[in-house]
Image 1 (cartoon, rainbow, N blue to C red):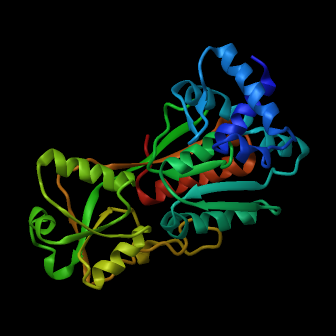
Image 2 (image 1 turned 180 degrees about the vertical axis):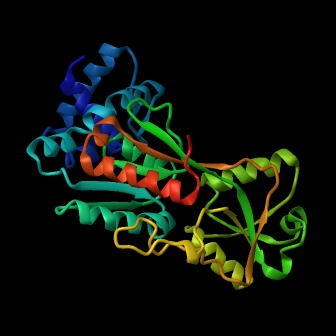
Image 3 (image 1 turned 45 degrees about the vertical axis):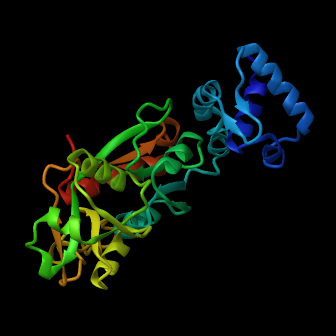
Length: 310
């Protein structure tokens, strides 16, 4: 296969169309030339790679994109690494609550170790972060979306989090199934793995529940429950009590505390599946000292929080 044709296909697939890719590729190629060369690639492979309007990859196109993304997606990072321009650059993806609760102290500690530390953060979750790691847009992501089957992406399981309900203190002793049958549920969007896992289990058990308010941050669930909008669907997030939190300079857990309001309580969901939180990265990213130090810091967090896996 012609490597240039593969690179053209990578940019077209990544930008969701030929016209969208024209202005974003790192080199100049006119739209008719791209169409012609991609037709040659399809003829060589004996299969169409994408549908043009509306743009969508075929099964063959998705297979090819997954195969070539780890290479073409890392080219810019590799160029910077060779030039010595990116040794202290770190591109991290995670949800906002993970950044604010866990990663901010760790990132501050990295800044003390790497004088030229440059940070790029992407707030998100799920498959979007996994795809960004695969294409080389992120060095590492922490997400409940596992990509163990994607070529070139390493998936390390960090912790399994039990599902739980957040309720006003006066409902703390009410049966969980009665709460779900009578109260609207405040949750993350339905496409989030946490909600998807919960909904599948409720369907399996044949139990009703009322989707209420959708929020985009876990820490917003407490606020809505406290104001009487319903009960919250969340996970048992590992924290340190205030008396045990780190306080020394550079401590990754400095400032981490159990900050749930005293007016709220957590109700366990017995025998429900847990939500797995994973660290996604690539072999190329892990070779860089700042990425390796970040991953090592995550290991420290796991140990301090008591969730370190053997």
